[in-house]
Length: 237
Image (cartoon, rainbow, N blue to C red; front, side, top):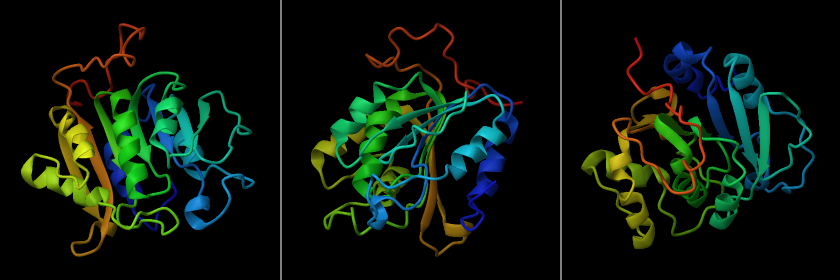
């Protein structure tokens, strides 16, 4: 696996090892470092998908849907689909989500890391996560100056309010209401510090979607096959 400097693969191995041979559906947001978050044009020439290739090799039966502001349509693999999206506008994410081939067992946000991108992404894609699925956000402790808004509430701050009190608190009261509407669907959320060391900045967060009931959001479950049970629909044995 890659990303050893973050040591995220230690956590991923623990979470995902029992699922290596499951026919998972995975959404990965952010496919290659060096886009507009680092002052490089979105129309840059893309050359590689390192983490996507890692997931395709690790999960031998999984289908990966990749989402990015840059163009990766050149990458061809029978278990890969691509959707292009600029996450700076929430409406773009909503429109892109209509292209998703199916709902997901795992969603990983490793895109720009801007706070509002992460929060827009969560609000627009969490509905496409199967009950019992995992939503993961990487690099919570770094926000790109090219995108981060001066008055932004970080995603780590937002979820710490939920972890500590069971209720989301957001500067934007409209956003707060939207997050609070999702509280009953979140059974677990934990923020790991960088390199899993107390005192370091927040690193990666894992959110588990409630599995005791199926939330059939209009437009998400309509027309889906009857068998939509996620791989976490019951505890692993």
